[in-house]
Image 1 (cartoon, helix red, strand yellow):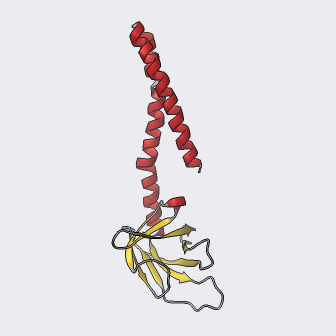
Image 2 (cartoon, rainbow, N blue to C red):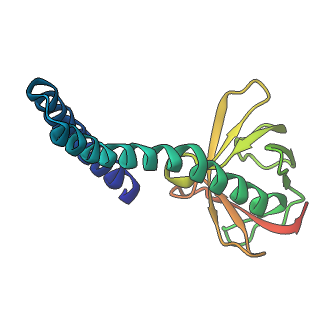
Image 3 (cartoon, rainbow, N blue to C red):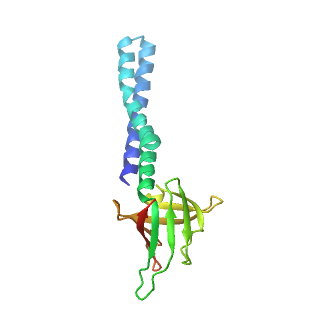
Length: 168
């Protein structure tokens, strides 16, 4: 949410200063004033910084964060049941740093046996795709530094948790 507000603020600020810069530049051209032209170019640096910051964030910073998160969460996960009295299953989810996954088990998680996964989905969730590239499931991630968890159906009664057991 904060990211969206900052994005709107930067767009609004950059747009206003761009408009002011163009108006001052037009006055400088019509009046043949070098001083007004220099002021217009000075004001024009604000939109360049605003739009440059947006470009940096979405073209460099966010992909870098997503890549490091993908590397941190890659590994082998074992299912942990939330309901009492359920036996431990042999279900295993292998997430690879190259963006692929393999699922072994009989649990009805909602993901295919193999496919691709991405970080940075809606609200930072992981997105799981089948081999045809169709989005099939979202999962929420928690923890870090060796204590990673991935939860499918987080806000439903049939929540399915995977606990990381080893790195890849």
